[in-house]
Amino acid sequence: MEKLVPNWYSAAQPLPETYIFPPDERPGKFSIAPSISNDIPVIDLGSQSHDRARVIQQILDASQEFGFFQVINHGIPEALMNDTMDVFKEFFELPLEEKRASIYSDDPNKVCKLVHSSVNYDWEEVHLWRDSLVHPCHPLEKSIIALWPQQPIKYQEYVGKCSTQVRKVALNILELISEGLGIGSEYFKDEVSQESSLVVNHYPPCPDPSLTLGLTKHCDPNLITILLQGDVNGLQVLKDGEWIGVEPLSHGLVVNIGYQLQIISNGKLKCAEHRAVTNSSNARTSGAFFIAPSQDFHIQPATALINASNPQVYKSFQYKEFLANYLMDQGNTEVVLEPFKLQT
Image 1 (cartoon, rainbow, N blue to C red):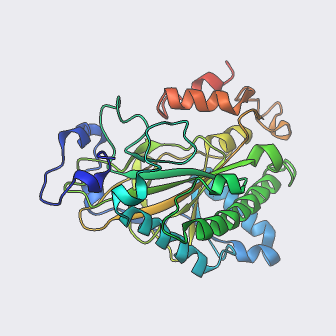
Image 2: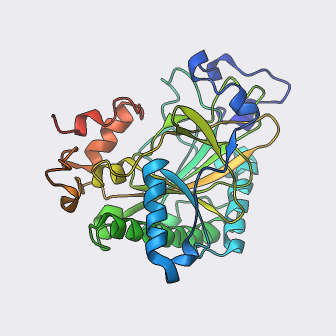
């Protein structure tokens, strides 16, 4: 419990040395004045009813060029999104001893846990400036929801409703992607998208944002991620060697391609590196919903995408094998895919 940022940090204190990254990993000026870019595509999902082909092409283009895009008119009520973001924020404002002690844990195997920096805290070289709440959100069984935070009192209700709606949006996007790739609209149903989990990241105001990070550069290990970004800047995507900020959009959802979607598409779609920077004045809270295969599901490039002109790039493997390797390499984007590539 004492590791959680609000439990030991005060604004008068300098940034502890254990949070200062090596010079080549620091965000520098980009943490103080994030480079907000309008280049990240914004796609209107509401228009698929009358121009489905155009929406599909927009998603494919964004997934190939950026690995990131935002969607609007996605069908989730604005009030529900606001209520969900409110309970996320309220959770991190609760008194530590009274409300969070029961779920605080460094145990990576615990279903619902609250951690500071990461589950690797005890052996990582530099700590992240964040606290995070992690728990599954599909299937939405009563036994699972019972493990979620009891406070705020509306947490389980709003997050349960929102996670169901977010999953619908994710499956809709995956269906559009599968149609665009030509692998059949049913490809991403059942086991390949069976699991959903939620990570609520909270980044308190930081005394020197230029020296530390909320999240280091990484790609997501799962299939696809849907993010409720909130209204505070901090998410950045690496494109052509430059970090660009993802502008918060009211009622928008940020979508990013995970490693499994890159592999299934045989490299056609791009899994983009991204990170979270901090700031000195405003706390930032976001909710990331991760859609993933079942642990035993065999991942491989879709057969329809393999031919003489496009030879298979990745081998077949179980998703749990990939996760184990990802955790062992701590998400190192330089090496994490290497064991799963076919030798040429």
